[in-house]
Image (cartoon, rainbow, N blue to C red; front, side, top):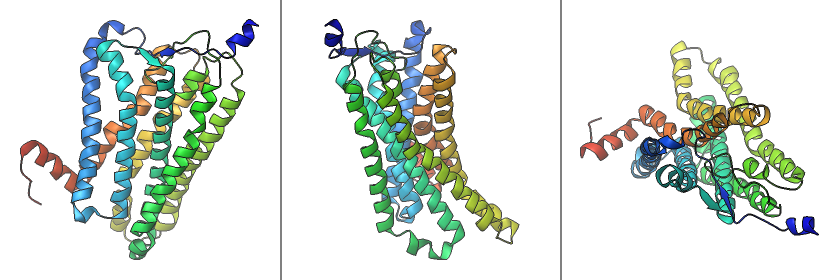
Length: 317
């Protein structure tokens, strides 16, 4: 009878973890953490406003960059309340349903970012392989339909996740190992079989980030073998590769922490909890912070907009 009652029990809230062992330094860590969020939101906001206002940037490449910036802002805003609550106010509790909502948006925006990186890879393939037909292949209609497909896929893949968690009983520990709610972290606290959750999580990862990473890899194999090596001039080859630099950086910023976090979750059970926590923080915070830096360095109009914001006037061309 007790087990039957347990099967319907759920904690009213979860307890989030900041950085284990550094609780006494949260006050000092709050300021750099706040700066990280300011940089992420300001940087991506500048990218979006610059692309919107500069007619010279109304090209498929920059439309996809705008989508990437929106996904980065979404990821930053998903974790902002719980992260600042912990480090600024030492408030570690999060309601069960609020945890599910945060979990959904984190996984959804992560899937959106992965999909946008694939679209940007295809953009580079077309630009290098067939530049004369770039405008006719990647029309505005194609770009926005691509964005709609990316959004629809992410939303549909993410919807089952909170419902799969909601059906599970939680009557033992309610202490999570991160500063925000992730599916695999909440799932490990369940007091029933999580086989369905694990299977769905694996399918979702393969369908989104697995297939996306393979598509990006194949895109660059195609660029190197068919396009770049087919260009006779060394200068033109370097110029073609140079146009891919920002995208390669964005891919590495997203997938390297993701792979690292996945490996730690699967094989790093013996590692200190601080390693798990820091890796998850890097995975969710690094791309939103550094993507704007990479693209502002590589894009003159974005650099000019940043100078305009801080100096009050625009620098010359």
